[in-house]
Length: 320
Image 1 (cartoon, rainbow, N blue to C red):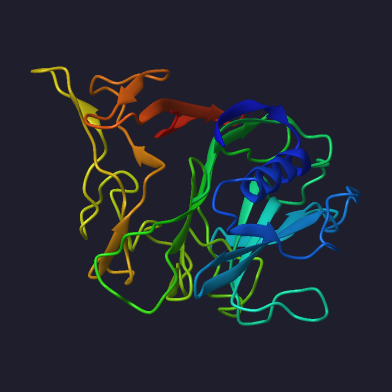
Image 2: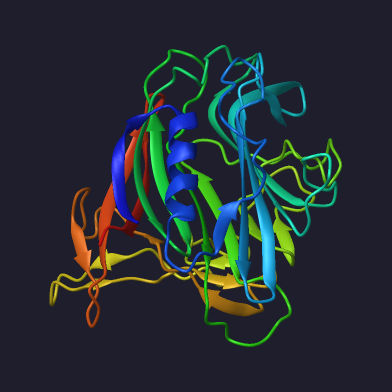
């Protein structure tokens, strides 16, 4: 457990995540299905892993499939619904049960996180495509920032993705203690107008199993509803603000994201612990280390651009 960084293909990263969680303290993570492996890394969707989480009466499965099929998945219908973007990446699915046919049930909560996006089709093979990553893993989950090597193809976003199980809640709500989140710095697109709400190829930036997912049914919009302090503040809602360094006392003022049981920021349930947003031009720069007062925890400030844009993904992730 701890902080990891390097450059690997997504199959190797997925195996590392699973192995580290299974070996973590508490014994809560186990292999959810031995038939789900990354052995088959062909241009298909056969490389996959499944984890089961158990903690007292709380249990759920997390299925992760590398989407490497020829041309990728239809990711979003854009430009006034005139053409599709396609993507290759990972499909994450949370479920409350596991089928005898070695898969999740149809009513599971899911999100598709693309690492490469293209307006026609994606030709890059994820088995050889290298991702540089910065990642924290402990017994509660993971948080990873990554960017891919240049391919000359389509859009390659820098991405943050994670899931965390938080022990302490503000109140008893009858749901799990976990939240899933993701964001990239190019195209956080969701195409709910053209497919069913349970379509497993769609991107959702927030999953609160098994309470709600966001976005739910919309073509575009804010991508941090239900997750205060997650990204740049907008003109509506209670999103908090990004972290900054004071010009007065040199301290960093930050806000850990507040997770809600409602997409309209009306039911705060807990705060996440592995990352928070920061703002460039306000005293912090890439590579800074923020030490939290009163704890041994430290956060690494990262600003990731990508092969296709100089716009940067600015988050501090757990480092110590």
